[in-house]
Structure formats: structure tokens, C-alpha cells
Image (cartoon, rainbow, N blue to C red; front, top):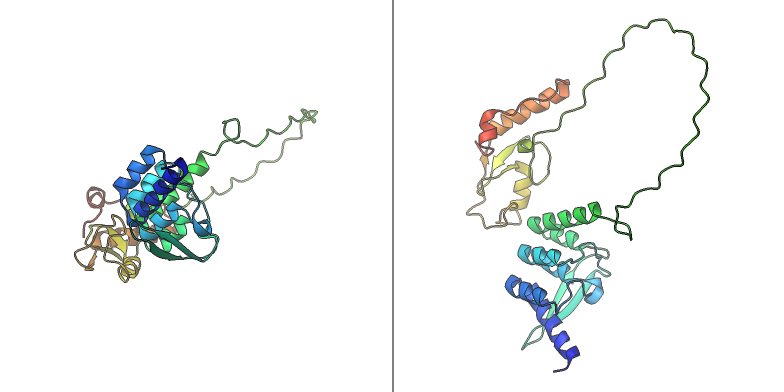
Length: 261
């Protein structure tokens, strides 16, 4: 087998493994160095698009660890590609022009994949460097000459003390935030996975899924239990914020067990 044919066979096997979510074969092929995770497919699609589209968290993680680019946009709204051995298969992916892997994961409800991709984009931005390898910094402004000292002004009459500025609003404790909306919960409920969510957000999620948005594991049921402890605490926190009274300590019961009902 020629080198070009062997490379083509490896890439085809790699695409098939990514599409099927075979993370063990994906890891093996990536470790061999025979495949390129950033090799473009039809319509500007990448292997990361395929993994995010199907919600394969482990495959997304492997591709990111091997420098797959999470910012590649789709160049068309309809992508058709082939894979398969010994039989050929045709697969279709629907999207919009400009969709990145994050868009695919979000639209398809794959929360864990979306978080992995967002973290990778954030890390890439924070690690941005110049061609020389040092952090990109704006050029320092030229020093300005020291001004000629002016004669001292006459002392001004004493003024009445001004009112102290109002304290900045306090950040909400993380235990008060819904893991889906990232906002303070007003009607918190506990799902079967043990996590506390805003009722409207988790009910919308459960309309289309029977999996946990935090762990991606299947839930035994869609039953939700009101979380009165956290509801009382968030209500008090919101009232203090609206009155300008500042932060309120998190009750010890919630600190010990965030999912107490």
C-alpha cells in the first residue's frame, strides 16, 4: 500500500471513529500521529464539529488535547460526507453558515461538550502570544516631560464632608446560581441527579432530554423536588441587594449540603 493510500485509509478510519464516538480508537489514532485533528472536511466542517454535533464528550476532550481548533466556522448550512468500511455510509449535518463546534453543542443540548469547548476557547484567548512568544502587550506610551511646577494656590475654605460612596453590589454566592442560567435562582428545585436548578431552566431542558445537564448521565425520572432551604436563602439575599444592605452570609446548612431541600 502506498504512503498516500495508507494516510487516506487512516483518515477515513479516524472520521468513522469520531462519528461513532469510539474514543478508544480515536485516542489510538491520535497517539500514532497518522491523523490530523484539524484536517478540513466538506463545507469547512472539522472532526470537532462531528464530535460536538453528536455530544461525544470524551472524543471532544481528546481532540482538544491534540490541539483541535474550536473556532473553525462552518462554510455552509448543509454538509454531506461519507465514511464507512466495508460499507459506505452517507451522513448529513444541518447547521448555519458560520456555526462553530460550540454552536453545534449548544443547539443540540450537549451541555458538557459546550462547556469543554468554551473553556478551550477561553484558554486559547488567555494564552495568546506574539510571534516572539511573549504576551502581546500594547506599546508603552512615550514619556511626557515633567510640567513646570505652578505656584501653590491659596488654601481653599473648608468644606463639609461629602457622603461616602455606596458600596458596590456583592457577587452572589455560587451555591445560589443555577448551573444552566448562571443567575440567582428564584424557584430552585432538585433534579434526580442531585443538582439544584432554576425550575424553568431544568423543565425546559427535560422537555427534550432525559439526561443530566451536569453529568450527561441518564436520569431515572424527570421528577423535581422544591428546594426550600436555598429558596429562602436566595430570597433573603435578593432583598438585601435591592435595599443596598450588602452581602448576606451563606447559611451553614447550605454550605455543608448545597442540595438540602
